[in-house]
Structures are given as structure tokens and as C-alpha cells.
Image 1 (cartoon, one colour):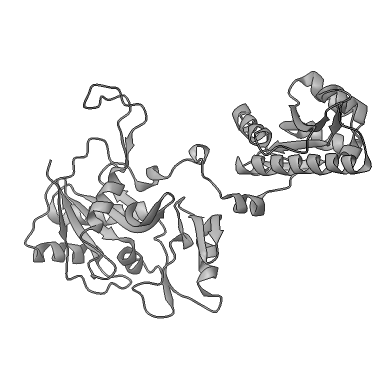
Image 2: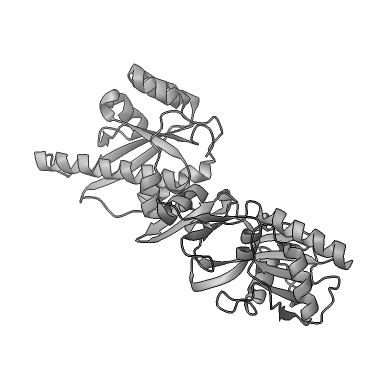
Length: 388
């Protein structure tokens, strides 16, 4: 297979209501090219945003205010670097808000609907040329594990954004189990070799792409939240943790709770002679016993909580009880509870802690581990009310 990437030079400065497809066709003709079936036209987000009027004045509150407006949530931040999830689901720096290649005091925002933008451009190109072509709207994103930026597809029409190779054979006949190719991103990255912010070439024609799947939008490239192992940074998890006593009725997968509990139990060791026990209250019988051990206010929270975890500090019998030791037990229990709340938050769950004085300590011990344990109350958790 041979792939060609041809820069489309000579596009003017784009402004609102310009005929972007017409200008792309004119650039293609200047290169003495004719669109053919299977060609892909890659065009930068910047010119698409300009054509769609997504240029705004920075305003008195600065770029940060626009980043906040364009963000669904903050994923991570450090100093001046802010990584956010946009309303489209993209995870990128500053929600895609950018000051490059626009007049001083102005910013460009991502298109409202990049897939829709790609389809409108594609439809115009197909109508004018008669060729079944694809369109990819590109932007430069950083990557979590790599230095530097690379062009990716934020809009796609007329070609598959992803090609699922699971179940097919590799070159040695082995069945592929996890391979899903981000075809639109590969096209965008290839087009980036012929385009650039400094060169003034905002579009390229990519010829020879083999698309062996039905067309799919770039939104299919966004990883679902349930599959995202790096959904938020540890610092952001602390900022975002939600203290809620009422939860959505959706069931919480046991695996999420087990992972959160495992993270706490696998953490640093506590004081010598102390360990942490975390008991999940799962059976109806255990839940009834816990309710009997709680005061009325705690009972109202516990009764509706999808997940209840009882933390205990286990004291080895050989450890002498002294005032300083008792302080250590309290500190250890508090550290374990805080770690558990953050671990649950990292799984997208809201939680709350009910202090031990709201319970009959002896009944809690029966549920958790006997006389050698110090109860540290209860932690309830679930999906935030109103949706995650």
C-alpha cells in the first residue's frame, strides 16, 4: 500500500462565513489534483473554528475563564498546565482554547460539533467533485506517556475513525484480542507532516488510505469512562472528592469496591503492631445488624447506601495500651479512612464517613473482627445522585 500526503497551499486567512469547502477545492486544483474515491482531506481545527465563528475576545477574565466554560471537568493540573475534558469528551490542554494564529486579544475554541463540521465539508466536496472522499478535522494533542504533540482527529466523516481488528489473524496466524486501530488519528498524524502552525498550510490531501470498515465519527475515539484507567490525577481526586450522603440507585460493580479496598490495604504499613481491616457489609442480615448498631441519623444514611464498608484498626494483643498508643490507633484509623475515601473517589464514586460514636462499638466489633479491633465508624459510597 502506498500513501501520499500532499500539502494544500495557498489558503487565505479564513474568517466567519467563508466557503471553506470551496477554498479547499481551489487549493486542490492549484496542486493540479482531482479528488478521487478514497481520498481524505485533512483540515486543521483552527480554520474550521474560524469559518464557524468560534473566535472569541479573550475578555477581562482572560483565557482561564474560557477554559472553564469549555471544560466538563479538570483531569489534572500543575502550575500553568491544565488538562481538561471538553464537552465533546476530548482530554487535552486548556480544553482546546488556543491563542496561536489569531489576532492579539482573541482566542479560538474547538468547533461545537467537530464530526458535524467534517460531514458538512465532506458533503460539499462530494457534491462538487462526484468523488466519495473522507474528511478529518485535526488538532494537536499532547500524550500522557510521550513528550511533544501530535495531530489527532477531533472530527471525522466518510471513513472509519477506528478499525476493530479483534478476532482477525496477525501475520503469524495468531488471533488478535485487543487491537483496535485509531485510523483517523493515523491519517491526522500523517497529514501533520505536511501541515504546521508556522508553515501556514492548514490542510492536506491524504491519498491511498485503506479503510476496511464502515465510516464512523471521531467521537468513537473517545475512551469510555468505565475503561479509563487514568481518569483523574491524584491531586485532582482530592479536589474533586464528593462528600455525599445520598446516592444514585445504580448498582456499584463489586470490582470497583475491591480495587479501592485493595489499594488501601496495599498501602504503607501502619505503626508496629497495628493493621487495618476493611469489612464490606453485603448481606441483608449484616445490613440489619449494622442498622441496629447505629443511631437514627446514621441509620438514615446507611439504609440507602449501595456500598457500606466498616474500617477497623486491628491491635495485636502484645501491644501495650498507653495514651500515646491510643493516639496512634486514632491516627491510623483516620489515615485508613481518608485513603479509602480517595480510593473510592478515583473510581468515580462519591462517599461519606460516619464517625464511630454514632454506633454501638461492641456490635460493630461483632461484624468486623472481635475484641482486638478498634472500630473507625462506617464509610458509605455509591454513584453521585443525578449521574456520575
